[in-house]
Image (tube, rainbow, N blue to C red; front, side, top):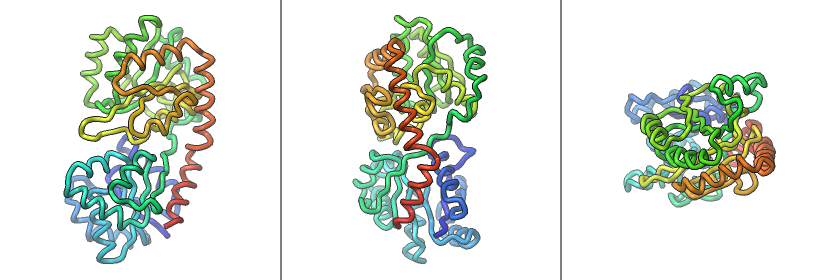
Length: 350
């Protein structure tokens, strides 16, 4: 069966969901195509646009990238025209649906009528089941890593250190959008503690977002050594992964249900053989095997985070062991080839 992926979230938009959808199209090859939904149009227009798009791309089934509102259209088209559809869920989309009775009702029927439901983590799968998804048709397909060691040229590692005068210091790297859910404020406070015993340790943050000004002010108030680099391309990000000593990101679940669905950046750091520090929140424990590929701490606990970061900076043998385990797990389980196998297997079971 040839599928048409319908979504409003594809590159060049940034973020894990856009990367996931792009990886799906790559995995399907000639068996897949994409239809990008304009955000400035009413979703009801899709009722007549999608049958035309299916015909144009010679596709016979839909893959829904966003359960709401695109899933509503897919459910209607299945009811009216018998067009089969598959739903992909990433975490926050389902949590948003749970909060509103009307959306919860819609999501329940969309999931129950889907031929298959594909989710990015076991944590997201649990939410999907709570909304009525059939466990038999539910498939966990974690995302593949996007930034790989192949992107990092050996000469770049000393260059990024030298450019920021960090040749002789220790680097704690963090990568992510600067939003409240990512817990950068906790990480900055943790680094202020770390730097009492490791004054030459520096936190390097790659990413941008609405919290940047507040986080820069917090770093000054805490007297923490932090370099905010803004958004960087994959090649530069790869160089920083290679140059770092420890990777850390400390997500939390927000009161509105916003939560980290998985955490592909931990695996990208693992691909470079780096030990990682995360939190027991959302899908993070699926990306970080506590005590094996990294160390997990409670969310919003800067003292606990500072303690494990300090341990990893001090105990190079432990850091190397965790990094080696992370590298092996990433290569074996989260390559683009493994992702393609899982996606095709999930669709073949329809």
